[in-house]
Length: 410
Image (tube, rainbow, N blue to C red; front, side):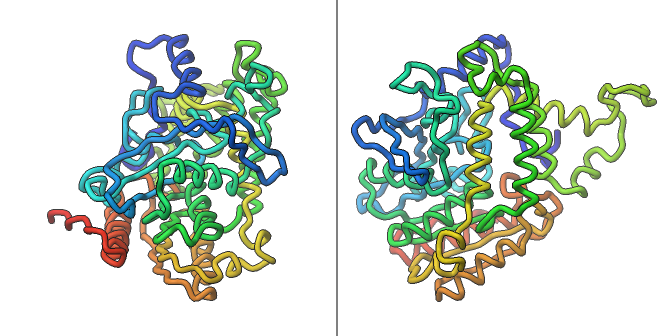
């Protein structure tokens, strides 16, 4: 796999058996190796009207919080991400999913900023989700887990930030589902956010995006091993359904140009087609690999919950039918980023955000990065994108009175 494509989290630890991988994945659900904030006597009120008791949020931090507590950045992960943005993942053994952007001397420079990345509510990497043990029953929540929204995820992050003793954030940064969280931070907690960078995202999901998610959910629920969402109690998992869901979704993350450049119609380890249903084409083998590695690190019910949270997100509906109302009075500095070949969240979606911010008289800059790498370009080595993020955060740091990162060597 070349740098044109995002690592899926990679292969499991070399030498580990399937039982070892399953045990490691399960332990990370409730007892993660990352930091954890537990809220035993502080229920979290959800949009559904339900209060979640005895919940926890798992997170990683990078860099050092300054004496004034003014240099904190929250990094929000996308659908299949986790808190391991810039450190080795304990399940896959691979590097962080945003190693290209976050770290010492990188655009989100941990030599100057204190970075917090939390697993989202409803996830499966240490934050309370459907795979977590329900303290009332002693078994995994499964579908007894209340449905969560993007706003619920952000409420949990707000509680974490307060737990860490931070009053205001220097910035919130995220792409795709992470970008939705950035928008929610700016809309609901703008007085706590100095700068915001929503990337490759939108103010709501399109019908097409909801449709793709529904295909994935139906694939999972059609797997006989799903067991009505109670698969963990039976010691099984709907691996085939989750794998198909991942394969279908992955196609939306890359552009046709990138797929053609990498695979075209090249055959996989053969000179002629087999006239059967084996993986004759390299693209078929690639997608099967994406699916098989994904099931080693992700929970099927979490996939249902997080895709549903994205589908429900609609800033305009939550603010009287106008996106601009969500940002009224915003003093946050915004940088909106899109990519020319992203057909999952095309540039028109980003322009909607920019127009709404302009209508609300907010400070906003906008950059469209020309690339043929598709939606996942924000996770890849994309120099123009990295320069844009670095430049924006440097300017915002100067405006806030924080020592800015040094310019990278040419």
